[in-house]
Length: 524
Image 1: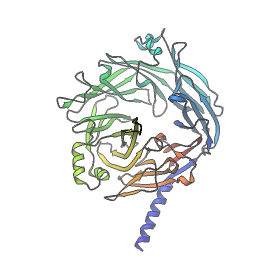
Image 2: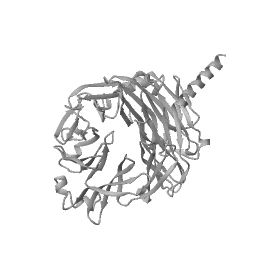
Image 3: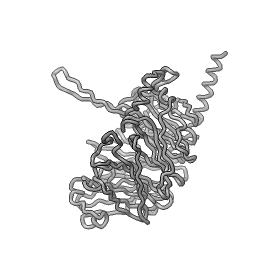
């Protein structure tokens, strides 16, 4: 009787979990290219859905985009193979039944770089173009205040710093967007930002120059306010002329936050004298501005907990800062009852924690999701004496934390998994109210560990089952299989999901050979 009761309760929990998530699938479609990647998914006011998928030619060269317009049941209405040459879609949004693509285009023959918007009615997908910005050798000093030719064109964005040449960041409500140019300037960190509204009218532009060598400043995060287009710009500045995290046993860097709008610029810097903040991520809503990250007690890369700097959005003054150590529950999740290892890790810190997402919720809680990620290289010798090297990407444990509005740690959990390769590994997360959902591919063979723990095991893409793991407001987690591999003609790219927090939805691309499918997962 007791066994029957246990099975019944488990069945009820599973049924309850299953009712939380609805699944809508498109029909199977066939692409000319074998592999594509979901770049954007957009939901229209009428329930329609737009997906934009990038595909590539040889040597990783971007070839074009598959643009598909579906109804709310994912029945295909219109599709377009949007081929590109020397241009990239940097962002996209919907307004008044129009799809707008913001693009960066390099026109080598004309020695010109253009920022364009391509717009179309959803029902036709017939695009017209408008130029927002147009840079050539004749006008570049007018725009940037510095001469960046001829290398700007001849070397193909050689003066782009990192991946931020023409980065386009939208405000959460899609009312404003900012185009960020980050240039290599050995003597000074240099950015130029152009801000537009959703009618493609330029609101303002600003040249950001920091009196620090480019190599000593690391750009971290960028936010655009939806009220007036104010931008918040966060970076990490190394001190003493050396790009070292520690100097004479002390922290050798600080963080700088700039607030910029049409009226001017404000800035603030902050650092901890005894905590090594590995990275900070900027989050903002209508009433709160915060920088959130991981920290180590002794080293920048050996992490002991999660920290927060809560700031006044108007003045940038610090309201409070807090450093929360990883909880004992989190360490037990990860290491079980091995008390010696937990004690060592609590003291020395945890390696290989990679940010996956930081979310500021409606109740001002902050959700931080991360993953244990690292790369190994293996060299072997063949029978004829030849050497071969293999690189392996490891996507291991899921790490999740939640802070309350006062910056206190509500809970921290570690979900054990072990995955290698990039095909069906990693996860996409979706925070909804008090809960957080993680969508992963795994085997049905969920492994039992010590201390009442479980571990999700990897399987081949052909046998991948789509699972959802949930963590509730008290930090308790549950899991449920959503799609069985035997019932699916594709596997789902959970490392390439696109979420819509406002609609509590997630879109995934499923692929196998040239077969494709879009699914929408809705948390109700």
